[in-house]
Image 1 (cartoon, rainbow, N blue to C red):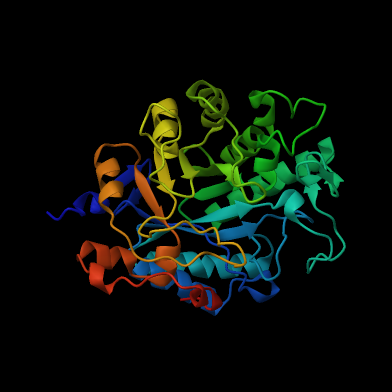
Image 2: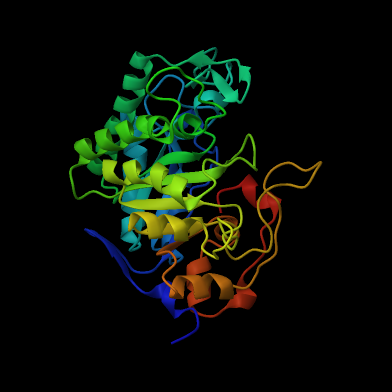
Length: 369
């Protein structure tokens, strides 16, 4: 057995059986004209499944709400033509022996009016803020909240009907669910604000509605993060005790697996322990977790001053990652930019072909590799 062998042990979560511990991280590609996943998108995901990836999370795909999208040409997860495209994606991945889950997404206050195809529709946010202190969006009413909860549940039901193996709810990086989590953007005066329990209520309602839509055996993942695209230093919680208060209601609402987003997976989450965010989440909830953050690369994604887009990075050792996985700190490993550079990343790692792994370069974002 090679030093990397633990990455290639199977993993089972209920009826979800994966051949290995390697996950493709969700990465927005904005290459679905008309918001429809087309032949290029089908081939993109098929290629990553053929490359040995055990579980694929799709790029963020927008639920059926007027303000869910904030970027041109991102795929949607509603409508006959769009769902037919996603069904073809799932079938192509399954034909290669892979498993796949759509990441269900609402951008919230990140949306700017004028973004096509919805045009002048403003962003919707818990307190009208995409950034703390700047009210420029629509403040969500109780009716708006009910509409969005239903949109997520409908998308979950459609994902199951289209043959997907699980769903992931995007609750990270300063998008809508995270805007409710984050006190900086949640300054409401009702039962969705204030305490950690209240700020998690919106997510719990979405999780519970999705669970009711798909039944008890269909896996639901939740991606969450401390950092936000609006503030890389932001933190929802500062102690393990607060983290337990935050996570317990989400776990009880029906999350099966937590996808814990860090910029650098190797960084400890709290002083006095080497556990990273996924490690603490697993310790507290007892649920399986996915770690992510610059896996296989020597630098995180944040560009240096004056640059735009993801930061370029060289390949890096997996020794730290494998040691943590071997210690049962987390269960699965999500790979982002390294997999954009190497659609067959999993196969190359399994074969020990480290010399065949290429670094991540910005031009790789220009096409669906």
